[in-house]
Image 1 (cartoon, protein in one colour):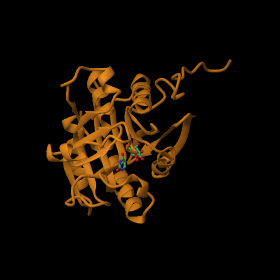
Image 2 (cartoon, helix red, strand yellow; image 1 turned 180 degrees about the horizontal axis):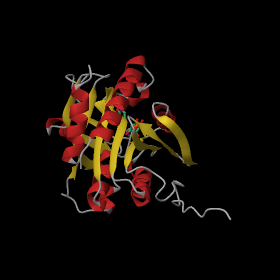
Image 3 (tube, helix red, strand yellow; image 1 turned 120 degrees about the horizontal axis):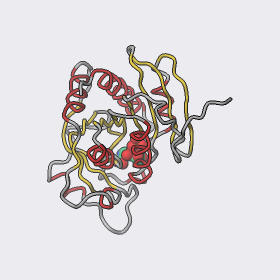
Image 4 (cartoon, protein in one colour; image 1 turned 90 degrees about the vertical axis):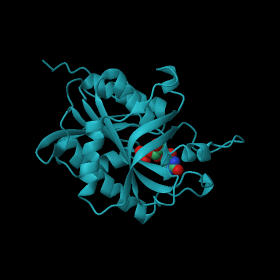
Length: 244
Ligand SMILES: O=P(O)(O)O[C@H]1O[C@H](CO)[C@@H](O)[C@H]1O
Ligand SMILES: O=c1cc[nH]c(=O)[nH]1
């Protein structure tokens, strides 16, 4: 008789088949890169843009999952991970910088995110902040302090659009309001974590300036690869050290 394992509908992640400790990233190939750092790594699901691995890092069971580009698709991943058993979720992503003090190749740990996305507007009222769990953010800071990296901790902006239309992105307004950079999913992660009672954090590698002309966007440079490698190690170290 075959075992009846319940799978989540969209990601095909097995219910109760993952670790409570989860790293998420946009790119399914980055999920594989992270999984290669684990002992006994095993791919457990690959559906649409959602690729999921289980393995062991520094003696603890962890899960790695990709969520694709943009808040709506990522939200499906976050919700299904939580239904399957995730308790701590750390996003390891990329972003554009708002400040010359954080040049491409450096890192941002997101203590909070501006909800400049559409998804969270359909979940919670305006004015509800998207905040990282203080223990997860602290664990990320502690792990970053042990590495030779340039990083800062603060507010990030989560946008839906990547390539601009005739409307100008309000990057200057966000920068002047204190934001350090822009990406596309952290506000969704923090909002959903707050709603579902789980603990989230995020770290991003800067691949350029957010206000630059995206026609020249190139996230495949060596210094970006190095920054991504650094943040993966920081994310994994934080994940297995966080006390909640
Ligand atoms: O590198 P990831 O995790 O995919 O994150 C960033 O890269 C994508 C845009 O190229 C968006 O998903 C943005 O948030
Ligand atoms: O959303 C993103 C991701 C990477 N770099 C950017 O400028 N924006």
